[in-house]
Image (cartoon, rainbow over all chains, first blue to last red; front, side):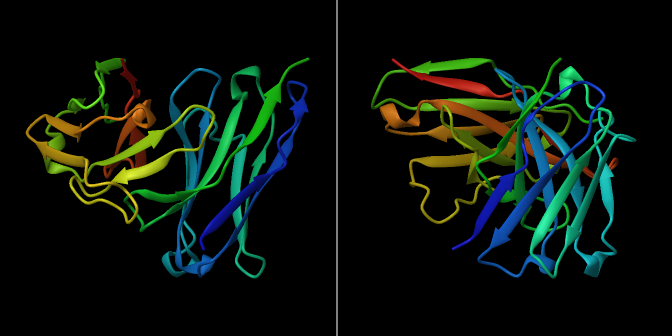
Amino acid sequence: EVQLVESGGDLVQPGRSLRLSCSVSGFTFDDYPLTWVRQAPGKGLEWVSFIRSNTYGGKTEYAASVKGRFIISRDDSKNIAYLQMNSLKPEDTAIYYCARQYSSSSFLDYWGRGTLVTVSS
Amino acid sequence: SYVLTQPPSVSVAPGKTARITCGGDNVGSKRLHWYQQRPGQAPVLVIYFDTDRPSGIPERFSGSNSGNTASLTITGVEAGDEADYYCQVWDLTNDFPVFGGGTKLVVL
């Protein structure tokens, strides 16, 4: 059974850092791209970042709203993906979901349950 | 970047057919996907590549995509279908996924 489990969400002050983890099981992790999507309270889905498999060079991309502050990475030996979030802002407050991408430029076929990040003083 | 436009809400009586639209410039030339998000839950893929259903998704859910409008159609709507629905494509120019703003399906 494919599973993705996010962790690391917390209440943090503006300007601080936080690292989210996405632990996966039930599939060959290094074959798939991994995406982070967030959802602010009462709002829609917003793509944050993705990382392709190392077979495709491990390419990363970021939404303009987080570029330069967030860093996505993956450890295929541990079946974990990370989202390092720096210089956090109140507008980063959201539930953060990790999701498996079916292929390099397509859809998200499995999602985790999400982890809540609250940025507030 | 590419923009997908959805109506904020659609209302339908139980047993009737709901149609949720997703508009975009020549969206019919793109491969479009739909997600269902029930209250308090993570999104779930319900349609991929315009018309395909993942295993476990009822046949009541179907999709189409042509011209400037894609649609998700739910026949025989049930109370459990009440959820937010999001369309998504891949912006090949900028190389990232784009979501529509979401449509709340209200079952009367």
